Length: 193
Image 1 (cartoon, one colour):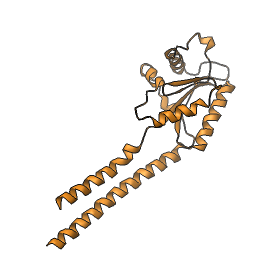
Image 2 (cartoon, rainbow, N blue to C red):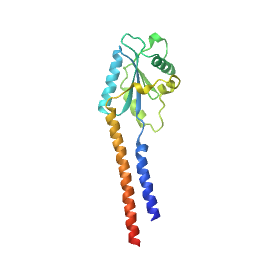
Image 3 (cartoon, rainbow, N blue to C red):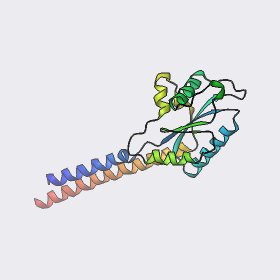
């Protein structure tokens, strides 16, 4: 009887832990952009389209470095942009910096000429068994820009609710297994007396 209760409790703990084990961190897409940049708008439209087709596929961070008059909007963001470019050995001069500059994991894209590669990078990050290093976040450790304030929500709240719902279902199943197992154990004990 003790073995049976131990097995049932072990199974229930595994079921309760399963949602956390199954939940992988989704990709993060960092887009350095300018408000006056038509290519940046094209990039955002591409990413919005991906999120419409596959909600919750990734988190999108819109890091607008320049306004409509090409004035710097946030000096910390500009520093993050320039340091990210330096990391990839792309920094030349301030006048030659181009947007959009897109970072996904350790991969980057300049402009929108090869924007479709972004999807492959996103899938690569989402399927990775290893923790993903985001170079933007590495560079940001010294600058301390609050990147979460630049996160865009394209129906992702609904996707997060669905994921929470799945997690709740696993918890309920685990509790049911414990209850049924406990009830079965009491019935078996009652029959042995």
